Amino acid sequence: MLIIDKGGKVIHKRIKLKISLLIEKRPMSKVRGIIVHQTGGSTAKSVFNSYNSGKSGAHFLIDKDGTIYQTASLIRQTWHVGKLRSRCLAEMKCSPTELNLLKNFDPSGTHRRETAKNVPGRYPSNQDSIGIEIVGQALPVNEPDPDKRTYEALTKEQNDSLKWLIQKLRLSLKVPLTEIFRHPAVSYKNKTEAATASW
Image 1 (tube, rainbow, N blue to C red):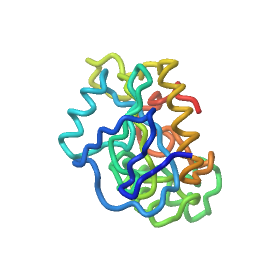
Image 2 (image 1 turned 135 degrees about the horizontal axis):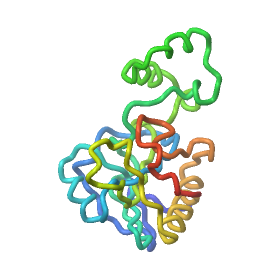
Image 3 (image 1 turned 90 degrees about the horizontal axis):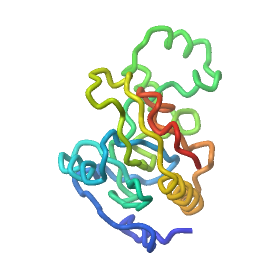
């Protein structure tokens, strides 16, 4: 189990604190899931620089050498998920009414309907999930269509750190394995993002 202080910071020798206050949003009262991402950038430094914009960010960052940084408090939301996909569609559990609504591609409408549900009826979202970013580029970088890029494979050190971190977070925050996802599973992202991540 991890020691988490009252400010949501993890106290462990394996985790380096590098909190970016600008990416922290509203309070998060309960963690219901974990979402695994890849950065799209080639270095941890580029990620830290992007966090200075205060827009999106995640709670942890894993560098190519396996170094784990905590970048946001575990009691604050960060914007790392985006618009939710339909979970009932992925799990083939939609009601006829939901299936009818899903006939037309409408990410905003789907997101609105999904956020009205509770986990596990929907995927974990910004309001109740921990985001873990892993440094990794989507290549080729000069490809204008982001869906035609392929994310590079995680290093062994990154996967080892990811497995350790997810295991510790799961036990400490009581998150079931069924609520841990790669980013493209829950939102409209490049399908290769975090494809080589394992836990």
